[in-house]
Length: 115
Length: 117
Image 1: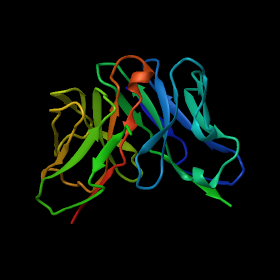
Image 2 (image 1 turned 180 degrees about the horizontal axis):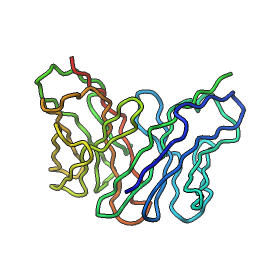
Image 3 (image 1 turned 135 degrees about the vertical axis):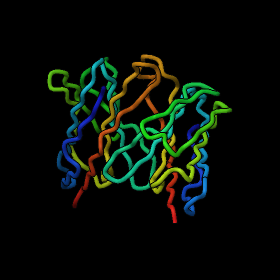
């Protein structure tokens, strides 16, 4: 069985400072990992995905994440936060075993960006 | 303009009524999914369909039903048997379900907020 743990339910940063959103996963197989962002009352938008091609993954809007198998982590970072980054972020693991494409979502991290 | 559309954006239901949420995609994707989102719980899978005329239960299928008569459409019915239907419902699609991440990335619609009065 696969699972995802987002270690912080809320993160608050000042504009212009670095962002770190933490995610640990558990999977019996080589996982696919994703980060999605959700603005209030909107659908989810893909930020980036890990597909085993490279451990450091670059996404949209300056975000990146590093896959660390030894630590079973996939933390999301951004060097400098912008006000528009305020949203909820979901770490997701994909399991393609047993047929189907089942995503397991973390419980989300609410990012607040202050002036 | 390709994408996934959901309607209506807001829906109100009286207790004991069935309601149907629409989901349409023009991405030519084989697979479609329905999720329920509650505050602090992330997304939970209700039903998914890998091909037309076939669908499987997800983790919380009780009180819901679906159909997949056309590739582009995957409507969700919330029945009166669903005890706590007030939630945000998200539909998604993916190109397929093969072993490559290019196929298992899911694309999401804008959601429908259902409120039971």
